[in-house]
Amino acid sequence: MKIKRALGRAGKLLIFFLIAALLFCLVSAVFIPKWRGPWGNIDAVAGFYELEEDSIDTFIVGSSQVISGVAPLQLYQEEGIRAYTIGSGHQPVMGSYYLLKNALLTQPNIKTVVLEVTELFVQSNEPSYRKVFDYLPLTSVKWEGIQERIRWAELQDEEQGTDVAPSAAEYVLPILSYHDRWSELTYDDFTYPFQDTPIQIRGQSLLVDQGARDTYQPLDPASTAACAEPKAEALYFLRAFCAFCQEQGISLVLLKTPRMDWSIEQYNTVNAVAKEYSVPYLDFNTASLNRAIGFDYATDILKGSETHLNLSGAGKLTAYLGDYLTRHCPVLDVRTTPAYDWMEAETTAYRQAVGDANLALVENCSAYLSRIQRDRYSVLVAVKPGDGNAYSAGVQQLLTQLGLDPRMPSGGCYVAVLEQGTVLADQWSSGAATQSAELADSAYCTLTSTGGKTEPNCSISIDGEELAVDEPGLNLVVYNHETSRVVDSVAFTFTETEGVTEVATER
Image (cartoon, rainbow, N blue to C red; front, side):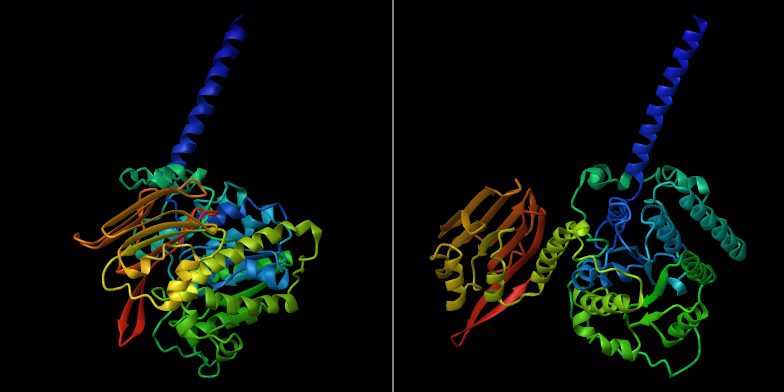
């Protein structure tokens, strides 16, 4: 009887501790920052560990340069290479090293690794390490990485006379670091596990803004033999990275994407390490490789973040990289292999995502109206009355072909919702127009257009979020109801000067 009672108590205690542990893990998951968005990496890490085991042969890793600068699915489209990228903002070389070691636990046949080298010269801060380690599953490799992180942080404390090194416990139990995030918690912190629409595609962010204005000059390797001083920790782990790949029989390629502030001295330092380990180094800042990809600073660099490639630049660099990997590294073309037919679906989705992203570059109204006639798009229209409605004959014809009310170009207030070639709702009025509709993915939109005796105005909202540019003329919101994402929001303002329609585009 006593034994039964003791076993019963033990069982209850075990259940209690299991429930407590589960609750602790759930609370910890809520408090860990969700680094999402174009430069975040939580989606990339989560997506990597959702891959079929042993389904890639090429691993791309490094700072945010690879997030926007390399296109894994373009590598598959053009060369049949199965690749995946895990980049993060200011990713320490130490972090890249442990990301590779951890990746090999689920993808043991990785044969080629591309490492971006920008961070060799950067003193990484604590958040940049957390972006690497917080999202990794707890494995022996992660534990090894945590210990190394603490060791180097303590060495830095000794050198600088500080006492800011984190503890291993803070990495294993992140809530110890983030318990004071109460005031910062957002809806995403609670719902992230249930969100199934990652922002990145195999670790790539499709960023298209262009128009950088600086003057870019490629590097001449013959101009000087001087070297830049790397950070001690970064150099240690770059050498460790090279040695580890040699031990594992992995073909390593060092990569540097084009950027304005990269120097010939930095090139020389990386090149020296590459020669030391007989590793190829592709630096697209050198004049020869810069010309080889047809790099154009004005069209290929991301405006507003001018140390990163945009989608155009990524396409050029990836085309060269794919050809290089095919000729020099042990990658396989699996496009005709039935076991990888599922990659075709990913490729189709990628092509559509590229089309969605590039829509934001279209400034000609007629071309824009032609491009948005896609089954995956819901198009929301609201006119803001005023001086911006002098539509050209060609635009009027396209609007009529879309099924919009022919009275719209003549003035007044107008709203409409188009989906798969059908006008779901529309209204024209001389005073005010308002319509609502449920879209194909059950999102709910509301549109208004007011004028006449009242102040001209327009509004387009989806599930309560205002999206209209609200400029005079034709305001459009393009929504992909297959991915539940806004593709673009734009306003075309038409003014007439001496009988010629001039169009201004606002986003």
